[in-house]
Image (tube, rainbow, N blue to C red; front, side, top):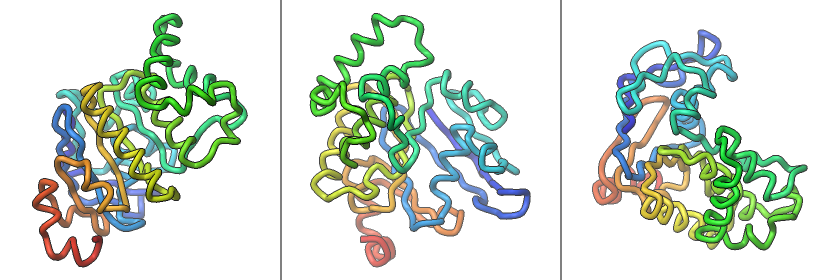
Length: 240
């Protein structure tokens, strides 16, 4: 579904953030992208979603193909319409809007309002019943875990084929992390979505991934299936 081939990225035409990075995301799979802070994980997602320009970044080499269409020269809004949604780290909600209004905003590219409203009921009913209870609550007052549920639910409202999830476990208690990851796995299974999951929490991320990559200083240092990565001594020593 998605293939990055030898991608290199620079910021401000000076700082080399990624060098010769190649990643594959198969259809209906969860692929993990792991590494320490500053390794380049978020830059990979920005390169895919078209958000590099907003950070004065540029792809200087390589190609990104989504269902055989090249993405590197497309605008972010066009990439969204192709079915790729990035859930940005830090739980970027519209804090002055209600939960329901945030979910409606997630469906801004869709035309049929009646089907959008039905999908809100389906999404919160199937995966996020807590949000149904809070539908008229101002979202800025939600807990961290509830806000993380909201940004994932809002992304689902756009009906993406590929979801890019950036650090969904950040700043959350272990029990909440476990719940969020379980929901992500259910979304892949029931909605048949493809997911590229960026995580510093390698142990948590590996628990639901089919395949994974480890970034170090902007380059792929390790890759393999969940079982293979779990048994690599170097990965266990530094990340587990």
